[in-house]
Image: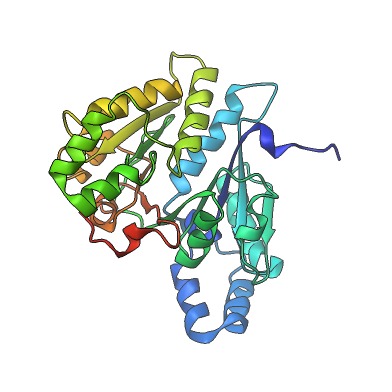
Length: 308
């Protein structure tokens, strides 16, 4: 078999519980342990799993590989702390849905973040806060997925991804000023630094990769639609625009809400996924679109500061 370099494409590491609905099975594992879980999975090996929170995003991203003939643009790796034995049902469901996923890491109880670099993972998605925190602390863009919304109807043939700004695309710098010193100090800080690009946040590299893939494909019927949904407002939006220019990123849509709820905008945007650092935003958003929270690194002062 010829070697394949994962560094040449967007690589998403995803837990089986993020891709498929395994809540009942996870509850069994937590209540009765690994032996009961293993037995249940074997008994239900032929029963197809339902779609999980990140399913529709993954489905659309994989379709991008059909748009080019000479290379793969997106690779998805199923990553689980379970054993290969319990993973057979997951791959049977992957085959059922026709998902082009062939790679997996079943770590048998070991920490998953130890294997993220080996698979050149650009984004790690899971429902395990422990696993995501480990990934974040090791410098990998990662987020904790919330339960999928009821009645969600994704846009077919397009992948719509929405990001919060501070502490997600951009560093924690400005958010710390706001939370520690207040709105007036934040506005003054952003005005003074309006021509200085914001430092990279945990998802800056991911956005640049997505923007590059978007630019690689034809403009007409482009499968990507990328949006910024932030609580910032004028005049603090100027530094954001200047930062994106510095990165060479042209977002399709941007919403500077100035304290308005994000969920209504996200519902109108029909995001396949929304990334934010605060539960106060992710919680309401998750009721209308698939959503995920980006944890702060262990030791960040933002962990002890109130949300909002």
